[in-house]
Picture 1 (cartoon, helix red, strand yellow):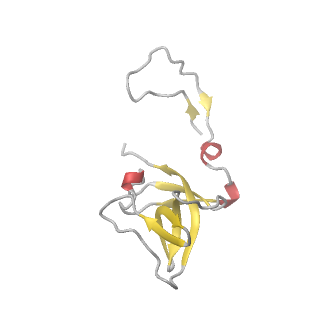
Picture 2: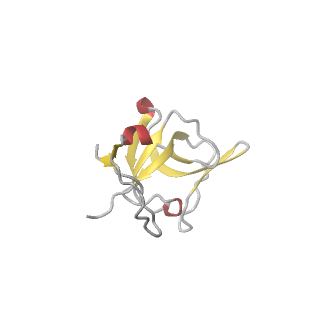
Picture 3: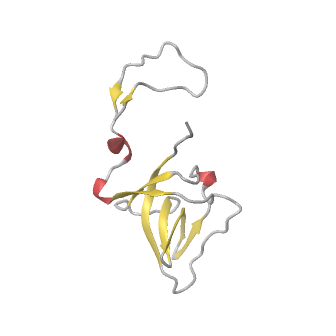
Length: 127
Protein backbone atom coordinates (compact mmCIF):
# COMPACT_ATOMS: atom_id res chain seq x y z
CA UNK A 1 0.00 0.00 0.00
CA UNK A 2 1.27 3.51 -0.73
CA UNK A 3 1.76 5.76 2.32
CA UNK A 4 -0.72 8.41 3.40
CA UNK A 5 1.37 11.59 3.41
CA UNK A 6 -1.16 13.97 4.95
CA UNK A 7 -4.24 15.82 3.85
CA UNK A 8 -4.73 18.35 1.09
CA UNK A 9 -7.08 21.32 1.14
CA UNK A 10 -9.37 21.89 -1.78
CA UNK A 11 -9.29 25.63 -1.06
CA UNK A 12 -6.20 27.63 -0.13
CA UNK A 13 -2.96 25.71 0.55
CA UNK A 14 -1.40 25.72 4.00
CA UNK A 15 2.42 25.50 3.83
CA UNK A 16 2.52 24.89 7.60
CA UNK A 17 1.04 21.37 7.24
CA UNK A 18 3.41 18.55 8.08
CA UNK A 19 3.61 15.97 5.30
CA UNK A 20 5.00 13.09 7.39
CA UNK A 21 4.30 9.76 5.66
CA UNK A 22 2.05 7.23 7.39
CA UNK A 23 1.01 3.89 5.91
CA UNK A 24 -2.68 3.56 5.07
CA UNK A 25 -4.56 0.31 4.58
CA UNK A 26 -7.49 0.94 2.24
CA UNK A 27 -9.12 -2.31 3.29
CA UNK A 28 -9.17 -1.17 6.93
CA UNK A 29 -10.37 2.31 5.93
CA UNK A 30 -13.19 1.20 3.61
CA UNK A 31 -14.32 -2.25 4.79
CA UNK A 32 -15.95 -3.03 8.14
CA UNK A 33 -17.08 -6.59 7.37
CA UNK A 34 -14.49 -8.24 5.06
CA UNK A 35 -16.36 -11.55 4.74
CA UNK A 36 -19.56 -9.77 3.66
CA UNK A 37 -18.12 -7.00 1.47
CA UNK A 38 -17.94 -7.02 -2.31
CA UNK A 39 -16.80 -4.62 -5.01
CA UNK A 40 -19.08 -3.91 -7.97
CA UNK A 41 -18.49 -1.60 -10.93
CA UNK A 42 -21.23 0.98 -11.48
CA UNK A 43 -22.59 1.27 -15.00
CA UNK A 44 -24.76 4.15 -16.16
CA UNK A 45 -25.69 7.59 -14.86
CA UNK A 46 -28.81 7.06 -12.74
CA UNK A 47 -26.96 7.92 -9.49
CA UNK A 48 -24.80 10.88 -10.51
CA UNK A 49 -26.46 13.32 -8.10
CA UNK A 50 -25.51 10.94 -5.26
CA UNK A 51 -21.87 11.03 -6.41
CA UNK A 52 -21.87 7.64 -8.15
CA UNK A 53 -20.65 7.86 -11.73
CA UNK A 54 -20.29 5.40 -14.61
CA UNK A 55 -17.29 3.12 -14.03
CA UNK A 56 -16.96 3.86 -10.28
CA UNK A 57 -16.17 0.90 -8.06
CA UNK A 58 -18.76 0.46 -5.32
CA UNK A 59 -17.94 -1.03 -1.93
CA UNK A 60 -21.05 -3.03 -0.96
CA UNK A 61 -21.51 -4.43 2.55
CA UNK A 62 -24.05 -7.24 2.86
CA UNK A 63 -23.76 -7.34 6.68
CA UNK A 64 -25.37 -3.92 7.15
CA UNK A 65 -29.16 -4.07 7.50
CA UNK A 66 -30.60 -1.80 4.77
CA UNK A 67 -32.48 1.25 6.03
CA UNK A 68 -34.62 3.97 4.49
CA UNK A 69 -32.50 6.57 2.70
CA UNK A 70 -29.41 4.40 2.21
CA UNK A 71 -27.90 3.71 -1.19
CA UNK A 72 -28.28 0.01 -1.85
CA UNK A 73 -27.62 -2.61 -4.46
CA UNK A 74 -30.89 -4.37 -5.19
CA UNK A 75 -31.82 -7.33 -7.34
CA UNK A 76 -35.10 -6.86 -9.17
CA UNK A 77 -36.24 -9.83 -11.22
CA UNK A 78 -32.65 -11.09 -11.40
CA UNK A 79 -31.15 -7.73 -12.49
CA UNK A 80 -28.77 -5.73 -10.27
CA UNK A 81 -29.32 -2.00 -9.79
CA UNK A 82 -27.98 0.66 -7.44
CA UNK A 83 -30.51 3.15 -6.05
CA UNK A 84 -31.59 4.89 -2.84
CA UNK A 85 -33.91 2.73 -0.75
CA UNK A 86 -37.17 4.47 0.11
CA UNK A 87 -39.45 2.71 2.60
CA UNK A 88 -42.84 4.03 3.64
CA UNK A 89 -44.62 1.48 5.80
CA UNK A 90 -44.88 -1.69 3.73
CA UNK A 91 -44.15 0.04 0.42
CA UNK A 92 -40.68 0.08 -1.08
CA UNK A 93 -39.27 1.99 -4.00
CA UNK A 94 -35.81 2.43 -5.43
CA UNK A 95 -35.08 6.08 -6.13
CA UNK A 96 -32.69 7.24 -8.82
CA UNK A 97 -30.39 10.21 -8.16
CA UNK A 98 -30.81 11.65 -11.64
CA UNK A 99 -34.09 13.26 -12.76
CA UNK A 100 -33.72 11.63 -16.19
CA UNK A 101 -34.46 8.24 -14.59
CA UNK A 102 -37.74 7.09 -13.09
CA UNK A 103 -37.91 5.51 -9.67
CA UNK A 104 -38.44 1.77 -9.55
CA UNK A 105 -41.60 0.64 -7.79
CA UNK A 106 -41.83 -3.15 -7.72
CA UNK A 107 -45.16 -4.50 -8.95
CA UNK A 108 -47.06 -6.97 -6.76
CA UNK A 109 -45.45 -10.38 -7.13
CA UNK A 110 -42.22 -8.98 -8.59
CA UNK A 111 -39.12 -10.33 -6.83
CA UNK A 112 -36.99 -7.70 -5.08
CA UNK A 113 -34.00 -8.38 -2.85
CA UNK A 114 -31.91 -5.70 -1.19
CA UNK A 115 -28.51 -7.29 -1.81
CA UNK A 116 -26.29 -4.91 0.17
CA UNK A 117 -25.59 -1.36 1.32
CA UNK A 118 -23.16 0.83 -0.61
CA UNK A 119 -20.57 2.20 1.84
CA UNK A 120 -18.15 3.87 -0.60
CA UNK A 121 -17.57 4.71 -4.24
CA UNK A 122 -14.07 4.68 -5.67
CA UNK A 123 -13.35 6.77 -8.76
CA UNK A 124 -10.25 6.71 -10.91
CA UNK A 125 -9.25 9.74 -12.90
CA UNK A 126 -7.46 9.58 -16.24
CA UNK A 127 -3.73 9.96 -15.87
